[in-house]
Length: 182
Image (cartoon, rainbow, N blue to C red; front, side):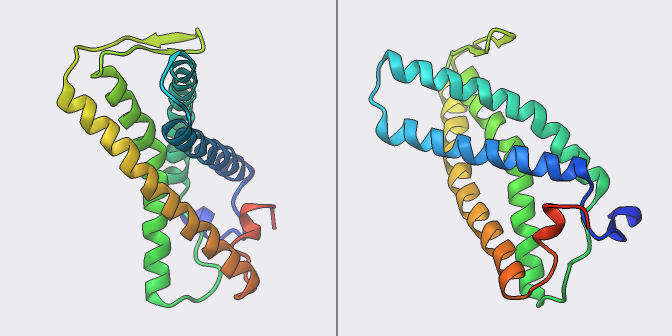
């Protein structure tokens, strides 16, 4: 933990920007992925939407590497209030799952696509070429992408519930220090 950051009352502007941009992107992509998986019938239209999902995922990976690296470099603030050990441990585990998911989700999707013999065109900016089809690796990537997606849903729910609990029940600054400079 960075001694400099732990003494401040809130996260800096870059941290807050990174948090909210990646939060919106990840939540949007999980919703879009679930929609594609459960409600869109196979066909050319679904293929085009999957292409958009993949392209956005690559952009999230690029920004996510910055976001995770910045967070690890900056460290985390000390707890805003005294918590029982189980809550502190749960909060740390949820943060680990969420930060890892920023990287795991796009990489697992890329692995599934690459070893499935499919290219990934990132909005015409660049293309990740198709790799040699290796069904086991493609299947593993797709499985991890789906399984970690559900893990992210649970972690996001706990993260939001914890922030609201700190704000509404504990009446501490846990939520507000990620919203504004204090």
